[in-house]
Length: 160
Image 1: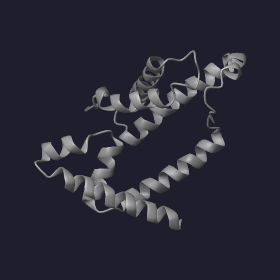
Image 2 (image 1 turned 135 degrees about the horizontal axis):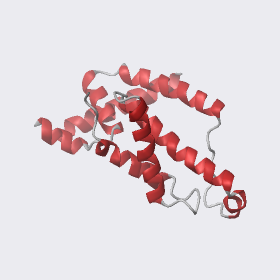
Image 3 (image 1 turned 180 degrees about the horizontal axis):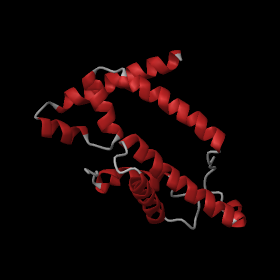
């Protein structure tokens, strides 16, 4: 069984912690980081061969679930400290989000190979500079592919 290294998802967990750090004053970025990693490990316990998209979703849901529980357990503090307006997803909103994500992922899969690779590696948190260095290719080529992919995705999303 070839289980991915949890540190591969370290950057995504840090980004989640940074993004949601101001939503509830009792949860520090370290708490949110740990919740993201716990969500990832719980998914791997159930599905050791889970793909990265599912892993990222599990991490995000773990963080949002903890925020929701924290606000429900302390409603007076959640209302007294409105640092930032937060819309925690309801099951209906998550279903709509899932449909939108599936649509976008379908569009990403239609991209040419090099553009597809640039988008996926960027979403996984890899530095295109490091990828270009490892592949022995020009960094500008990777950034150009990412730029073209973004333009195509914007155009496709504008028409749908």
